[in-house]
Length: 213
Image (cartoon, rainbow, N blue to C red; front, side, top):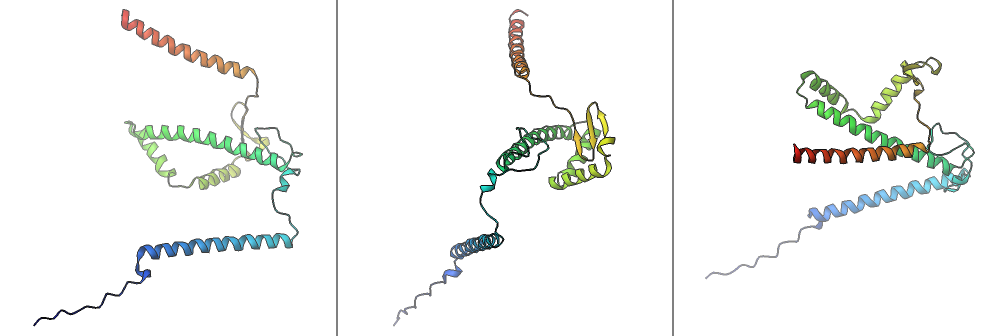
């Protein structure tokens, strides 16, 4: 005679053994810890500012800056407000960033082409440049070249002049830039018209050569 044995139900696994539940709980705890730390830092900062009688907020933007900015794309003087100084600094940052993007793109393209050159010397020189600078952080390179310039370059009165009206000193590189003039707009317009006319004449000449020989 065969009797069936009834097995007791298997115990349910602990939720902590479930990787999905465990991961969600850990993420919630991490976010809560970050929020608590941020709240503590903000509260501590506000308490210290109140204790030192230092006013917070952005009300200072309407006050006089009382400091100068060496180069600015907009009119600025130390009598302007902090908001004006912030705008001048922001425009300078965008201007330098745009120039850096263009120059970095041109330099990277040139180095990439020369790296693939069939000329052994050119290819090896490009390889040395790429292998030397690609793994060095850009900020470290800036510190290096700026420190080298300040240590080796002469004072402004004895500045090097590699090109006419271009001066290199321990304070940086100074070079002339054209002043704004309404004629530049007309020159740019004439240049654009000349480019379009050149393209049109080139296409017309090719079609005429193909039709007449």
